[in-house]
Amino acid sequence: MGGINIGANFNYQGATFLDSRQGLPQTLDDLLNWDILVPLGFEVCVNGEWYIYKGEDYWNMETGHWEKRITLKDYTLEINKLMAEVFPATLNVSGGGVYEIGESIIPRISWELKKESALMIPEQVTIDDMVVERPESGVWRPSQPITSNRRYTVKAWYDGATYVDFVDIKFSYKKYWGVISDPAEFNDPYGLFSTWADSWRLPTTTFNCSGGFYPVYVIPLSLYPGELDFQLWVGGLRSTDFTITQKTLTNASGNTSEYLVCSLGHIQTGVLNIMFDN
Image (cartoon, rainbow, N blue to C red):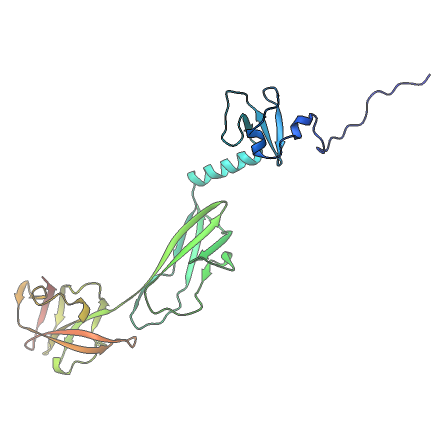
């Protein structure tokens, strides 16, 4: 007597659905306009994503009464977003600075993307919207030198987030002060002290005139505030014993510009505390 073999091998590959209604919708609009009777919790597949029928009490502007099933991928994306907000990475760039007008430089811009103490390798880096070929190098230089003020915008992409920082290159004049032997013969500032000319003012400064010298203060003509505001103070007392001469001078970087040379009216032989202010 032959036996009866009930059953069959089952290897479902997803080519067809267990319920034909599961494969009916092709777009989200099909879900939005769905009018076929299905029970609560019924699932359909659209473009590889599964949607659950939630009934008349649920409504979505794109899918109607259907709610997208949350997948592991969705959870991972949300967790990554949350981690990025709680523990954000920091983009630090360097390479900015102040240079003397007349210089020609090729700046070296570098960046580090860090999350806590870990160094992250950006997926992409742009500088002024130009894509850096090797973002992992952490360094970029322009192909041509620059001679005027410039701000570079550095953007880095990592794990779905964008980070932005800036590098500023500034070119500035200098102002000079010190002692000289003869104001009439003064033609270059190389032997004087100097700092960036961000203001015409000079805080109280020591001028050592021992042996007989003239204190001198040199500023770019563009900074001169006018006769009423430009005041000289010696030892805390205002003095009007000074002369101002306009001269064309060349700085150490080869730029030639107009300056005002202010010197005391008489030779000095001691140590003076001098301030220029109003």
